[in-house]
Length: 334
Ligand SMILES: [Zn+2]
Ligand SMILES: [Zn+2]
Ligand SMILES: [Zn+2]
Image 1 (cartoon, rainbow, N blue to C red):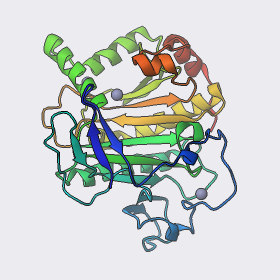
Image 2: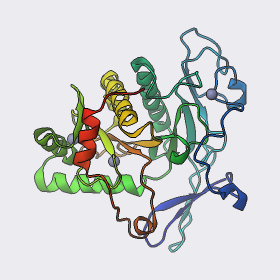
Image 3: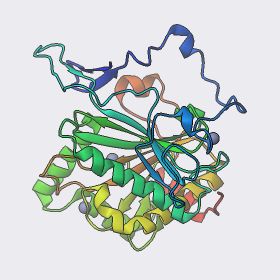
Image 4: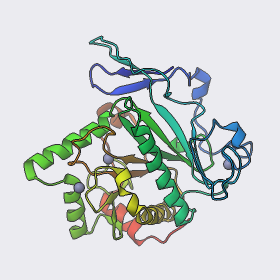
């Protein structure tokens, strides 16, 4: 069982995972390429090697945990957090802990091993977004869970341990401090101006143009003004919406612009490893109208080194205006 521990100085929480018990040899310098070949538990035909599926899209009506699917969601075989148990919190003031209740799931985005999210057709990408929303809504029924973070690690240097295209979600019994900080920033802007800070940013960027990468009827893609990472890019819904799962009617437009962005990044940066994360309002918080969901993406280009680690202060070697200009003018590679 994992345990959540609160940093007594900074207030942030850490998952101390005993299930994944890392021994010294597990931390040998990471190989930056796939070991390749070998058996893939996510390939069609190998369903018996994963935990039983939680959700699958099966156009042929085939039975669970068999081939015939377009997308599957399964529990992570080596979960950081588990569903079982009660959310017990220690009463200690200095060292607060909480039992490691949560969920850790894998969204297997397509049955074929050679596909990537950037190469999938638009309707398959839309299916991936639908699966995220569907799992969010299902996990929301569990009152013990406060937040679901949906993310993708693409490539070994982005932290993916399997090559087969997939994303993940981790449901948490607390709201992560990063999201709380965004919500506090948005709330203070709302209180001083009456406006949503994300809506204000979208309007300003669209007027200005220099940091816009792409744009369609429902979404804007931009390189944020003060992004810590080179080529960091955000996708924001144009209509003010606090929750990702409330944007379902616009998932076709989101799928189109996400594919577009991934292909631009592939073309400009030579198919880099990348991470993306969806920031959405907490599951059970009602007062969230000042928040505006978005997707944040970083290609794995600069490494976090001593200065960044020690100061939470970043050096971005590519001005966001230049990154946006490269991405805007790029061709597209699947
Ligand atoms: Zn595979
Ligand atoms: Zn807004
Ligand atoms: Zn965010």
